Length: 224
Image (tube, rainbow, N blue to C red; front, side, top):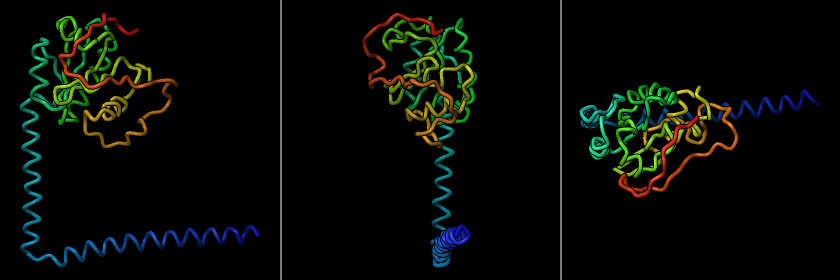
């Protein structure tokens, strides 16, 4: 009886494999037929389109670099913050303080991501040099990342709560969290963080969209 059941399962698996192979073969045949029916003019147009796409991508890359993308850098004042977010569509700004150890941990990860995600500008600003901005954005926990899109604060990452509540989180965890807010082009699965073992009860610190000149003030404090 058991042998008969195994035989049935084996035959079912064999049919599935054969069906998958036929589907792949049909797709390849369709692609081959498409190329075979293309004349020289079609091939030339295809080549031109691909070349144009490469040129546009290279032009966009150079434009980003000219605006300071690709490097994680410090800006000297809050006045510079407004200029930086005005010229770039997507900006991650780290509000930090020299005496806060966790800010140095974030610096390491942000430097890596700045080089990987040229589409986004990564900057840092000392809160002691930006009293007006920290009041308006209600920055009260250090470190805080402000995620700015089209001149508006779309989201905040406050402390390490969204990163697993640990100082040992990998760069991929921060990358995933930024991807959840669509501030970078994230290629992974948004529904699944790259690591497990997060403390239960961890929640994202979501905020409603508002302009970077929004009103309101909370006193600033360091996270333990």
